[in-house]
Amino acid sequence: MFISKNPKAAEKFAIQLKSRTLQKEYVARVGGRFPDGVVLCDQPIMSVSPKLGLNRVRATGKEARTKFRRIAYYPASAKTDAETASALNGDRPATPPATASEDEGYSIVHCLPLTGRTHQIRVHLQFLGYPISNDPIYSNRRVFGPSLGKHDDSAENDGEIIDRLSNMGKTELAETTAYRTHLTCPPVVAPDTDPQVIEAIMFREHEAAVDAYHKRKGERLSGEICDECEAPLYTDPGVHELGIFLHAARYADNEGTWKYKSALPTWAFPPEGLEGPTSIPDWREPGEGEELIINNGFAGPSSDVSQDVEAKEDDVLALVRGVGMVNL
Image (tube, rainbow, N blue to C red; front, side, top):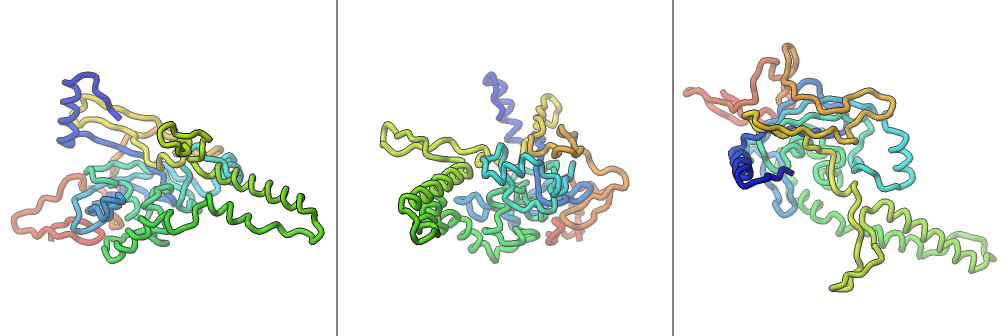
């Protein structure tokens, strides 16, 4: 967040925002090994459900272009001992955990949005088949199925996807009920076991289940009551519920009058025992002989796709699925 210190600076900054003269860079963590070189996704994006904040790739959507470059890849075996122990103990993580599988390792990706659509980076990464690992919407197999919406620009399943997304948490048994229901039956013990022993076992199991539930959940009852409505108050949500593996790396204006660069987030650091970047590198365009990939097609090292396609007088401009706008 940027806050101006005086009205004049605020007005100037507002003009830059409205005229889209700011350059933004982000860092994301995605499952699997992201492709080499620079990848440009130029698929149009449209809002499918404003209420749910769901956006998807559509040929009839608004122009959207994002460049990506992998800056690091870490194999699945690179999980740190601390991460593994925390997961086994059910502890509340210090960073948002991955909801999608990272069985094939994960990549740290440098993202350069050339347009500013809602959820643009998240939607484009999903379309490419590399959704942000802990994205609750676009990396949710319960909503999008096993393929997670890879290369899907069809509206055929929109209704089902919206229904599943809107019903998340409503049609499933809540964990608060689950751990109580789980203990309605007495434990399996010898017939002549003292009832007090059975009660003690059930009590310990119940306490353990409640404790495990509280560790998993970011919000829990604080034991306090609202002064106004006397409703039970909850604690603040945990860190793992407040963000995803997408970090604003650098903001600057195109004129070079100001710029800001942030530190690399901890979830993007190399795991213990491995080497990797510990700071955000400068954005690097494709070098000589380096591949520039448009979605999944090879475009050649010298193609300049950062600018809008300009059609000549006799050309026919067409939108090709999986490629974008081309001259025929």
